[in-house]
Amino acid sequence: MAEISYLSAPLHVWWDITSHCNFTCRHCYSRSGQPSPQELSTKEVIDVVTELKSMQVGFVYMLGGEPLIRPDFAAILTSFKENDIPLMLNTNGWFVDPACAKRLATSSVRHLRFSLDGATPETHDKFRGKIGSFKRVIRGILLCREAGVPTISCSFTMTKENIQDIAPTVALLVEYGVDAVQFGPIADTGRASDYPDLTLDAADTQNIASILAQCIAAYGNKITIYSVDGTYDKPCTQCVKKGLVKPAFMGCLAGRTCCCIDWDGNVIPCLLWRDPIAGNVRQNSLREIWETSELFHNLRRNKGDDHVECRECFYSDVCARECPLSESQVGYGSERRAKRMKMLTAKIKGEIVGCATVNNCHT
Image (cartoon, rainbow, N blue to C red; front, side, top):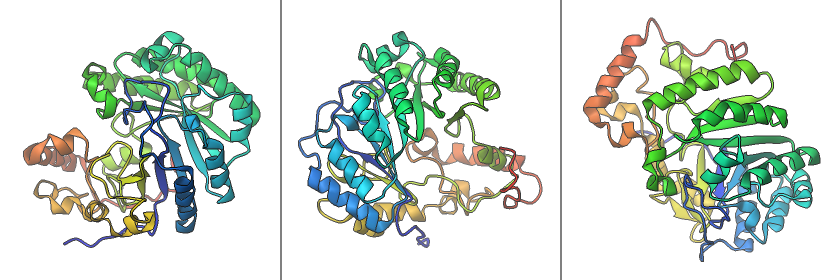
C-alpha cells in the first residue's frame, strides 16, 4: 500500500454555509433553493470556525446557496474576524446594499466574488432565473468597491448560451474596476445535469481559449483573467504538457490540500464531488475527519504508479490523475488512457527537470 502524505490541515476549506438561495440558477452545482432542515446552527458554525482557527487553516471560501441570506450572517462574519481567519466570499449580489457593503469591508473578507454570467441583463437574468439580478450584481460591485473591500472579482460560468458574452463581460468589468474574473465551464453536477444542452463541446472549448487569449492580450494589464486547466491552461500547466518541468505533485488536490463542508456539516472532498462523505462535524471534529478519514487517505495515496495504463508515463510517480469526476476518470477506460499517455510521453524531449525560473517566470 502506498505511503500516505498529507498536510496537518487544509490550506483552504470551501464552506457551503447554506442551501437557501433566492435564485434557481440552471448551472447550480448544489441544487440550492430551499433551506435544509438539518442546516448547522449559529453555535455549530461558530464552533467549527473556532476549530478552523486552532487547525491554522489558511483561509475559508464561503459559498451557498446564497451566504448573505442567512439571518445570522452578521454573527458568522464577526466570528471569522474574531478568529482572524481570512475569508473569500461568493455572492449573487442581490442583498448587497450600502450597509452590507460597509459590513463586508470591515470584516475579514479579503476577496469578494460576485457571480456574473453575461454582459447584459438579457443573458445574465435568463441564466440566473431572476429578473433584475444583473442590475443588482453591478450595483453590488460598485458599492463594495466604494466601501473598500480589498479584492473584488467575478465568476462567469460558461455555457453554449453565453460564449458571445465573454469578451464584452471583460470589457465591462474593466470599466467598473474589478480586480479579476474567472471563467469556468459549466460542470455536469447538481442542477446543471438537468440541462445537457448547456454543456460545452471540444469546438466550444477551442473557441473559448482563443477568446480568452485575445482578452488577456487586450486587458491583461488591467484585470486578471483566468480559467481552469483544459479550457485555458495556466503557464505552469503548459510547461508540464511540453515536458519542460516535472513538479513534485500534480493532479487532484481534494483531501490533500483542501476539503469542503456543506450546510449540514458533511465534510466532502470538494465542491463538486459531494458523494461519498468523509464525515460530519456533528459526530467528529474536523481535525479528526481530516486526519483519519479513509476516503481522504485513499485520495492521498492515489498515484499514477498504481494504475497499469499510467505506469509508462514520466509523470506517474508524481501524478494523482485527473479530477475523479472528469470523463477521463469515469468514462475513458484503461485502453484509451494508455493511448493518451503514450501520446504525451512522445512529446517529451530530453531530461525532465524542476522549474529553474520560479523567480523569473514569463508570467
